Length: 236
Ligand code: TMP
Image 1: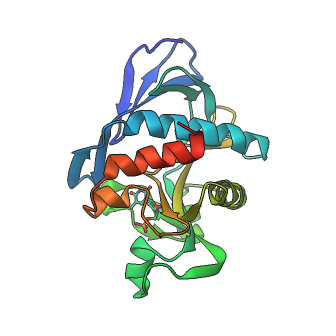
Image 2: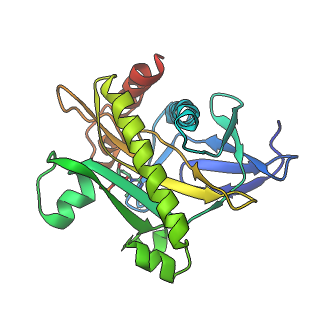
C-alpha cells in the first residue's frame, strides 16, 4: 500500500490517502507539542515507538471486543488504518488523580480512585479543548446518546485491558485520552493512538513518570521514558 497525497498534518502525525478510498496511511512524527502547541520540541524515536505501541495494543483490543481503525503496520512509522471521521471528543479515563484533574479540584496527584472516572473535552485547540458533558456533546450534535453509550462502553473496556496489561509490566495506568471515529458505514471504532503521548504511565514501584509529562514538565530523560515503555510493553 502506497501514500498518494497528504490529506492532513496534525501535531504528531500526518495522514495520506491511498488507492483505497476507505483506507488512509498515518505517519507518526517525532514532533512533540504541549499546551495547545505553545511548547514545541522533538522526541527522537517517539514516532516509531508510538506507532508500534498503538498497533500492538489495538490488535489486542480487537480481540477483547473493542473495534479499532487498525488495518496493517507498513513500516516503523507508517500504518494503514480505516478512514474515519473523527468525533471531536477527547475521551479521558482516570484511575489516579493527576494533571488537570488535580489542578481543577485542588488535590494532590496520586490519589487512587475506587472506580475509574470518565470525562469528555471538546477537541478544539482554539477553545483549549474545554471540558464538556454528554448533554453538551449531544446538544452540539457531536454524537447521539447511543454513540455516547458505545463510546463509554469501549473506553472502560480499554481501561480494563490496558490497566491489567500494564500492571504485568510494572506500570500503573494513571489516566489516558482516547479518540473515536466513524467509518463510512457509521460504525464507531477506536482511532488515533494509545502511547506515552496520550497516557500517563507511572512505574508501579518507584512512581517514576514514563510518559509525555517528562516533556510537558521538563523532567529530562524524555527519550529514555519512551524507550523504557517500549521495552516493557513490546520487549524492544
Ligand atoms: P490532563 O490531566 O491534562 O487532562 O490529561 C489527561 C490525559 O490525557 C493524560 O493522560 C494526557 C492526555 N492528554 C492528551 O492525550 N492530549 C492532550 O492534549 C491533553 C491535554 C492530555
